[in-house]
Length: 319
Image (spheres, rainbow, N blue to C red):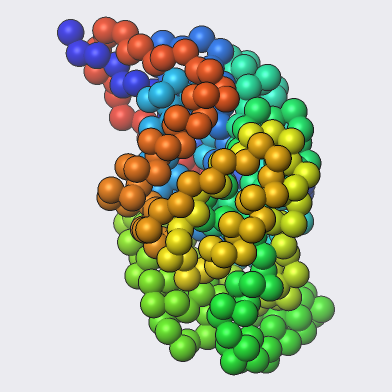
């Protein structure tokens, strides 16, 4: 007799604001009313870019995982496409939490959040706003837009100014947004142009993905003023900060300063770079640490696959 997979994956579409977000719900096999961790990705990224890898490992540990894509990106709803709104993305987190709280078969008293990169900054913000959560994980988190802008350099900011202006005009005229690359080669016009940014993004984009390496340029001023690390001191729940000591995107020194202000914060540092966290040995090390943290604070029952026929293939979500 074949054994069942340690989890099942379900396609979900949940409402948020004026549209909807697409998500995957991973349910651990053989666990009744499991706790759940909600996963959100980084700058312009979609859930196909290795959120499934983390979600699978959490589900194997007996923790349900809910990985979603923000509105305006991937196969989620929202027009215009590739519009990054911090306010809307935080509302997507709130909507995801609300959906989990009403989902039958989950323990809605044991909810954690997990965010990576820009989503890691959102996890800090959301953790401060939702004291009912049990725990949070902020992976290579974006904690200070000003620090990130200074790391990019004033020349890059000046180079972006004309593109921002054209996109703001497009917004006023309700015409198509003017785009700027998310990741580019060193010296190029992009939100991230460190040497590892473009190859790092390419390494985690699977074939046939809905990811587009561009975003409406109007977001840049709000990125600079977004400083989620400043509310770390207000987080009353346990939060794990996983910080890259060689991070070229989210300066680690500033992140460490903010992380140390969290009353129940735990800090782990890694020599791997910002984009190395998603693959290979750095991923294996990171996910072990995160499972240990989430297990301590969510207390899941162990997943126990039951004997049975081999499962059929789960069809990918189609919009």
